[in-house]
Length: 243
Image (cartoon, rainbow, N blue to C red):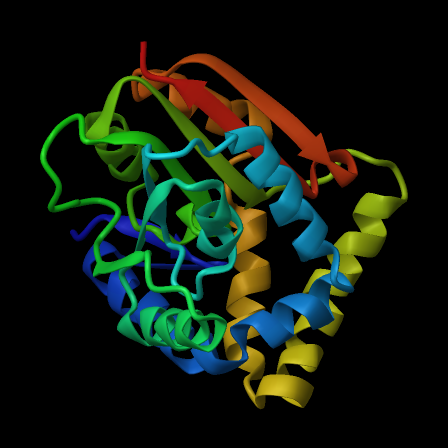
């Protein structure tokens, strides 16, 4: 029997997930940032600004921005002088990011197609590893965390922002209704793609709760782990250090 992993609310064979997630992001790549604005009311911009303030990119340090395809996080870190490598498993997402960088006149970023579970980099090469709204889409989260730990230098820092489950009474029910009923309809209206956005909503519900994901980060070897909930945990910034 093949190992089963989640794909939204569906359980599928491990070997299927990478390809099916790839299909989702290939379809949504060109509308991805427009959809982020529509689905969050523009709040994702504030969350990302907050995230980068926590990372504190420094001049000359090497940062790997995993699952960073369209460049949203990299564009925020690049002006601070960090040497940022944008990595993503999906070439269509990277193509959108490269096009956006060219429009902005940014030529200092490195773009690389990478699988978060099997990075091609040698050990201890990055000062920081960031991943935003991407880790819930990998097939084996523990492998991605292990790879993040491996490629970080001693003293390197790990920062992840991911959707989670809000603990606010009342808001939780409203958020569940929005993500399951309205998000796919918005995807249909703007991107003509209801199914991809249904998967994205369902994948949030299947992602481990904040305490469990923090435990996974510790088990990967990280110390001084921290969770910063936003909107009661609808979004959370996780961090840890390689000490």
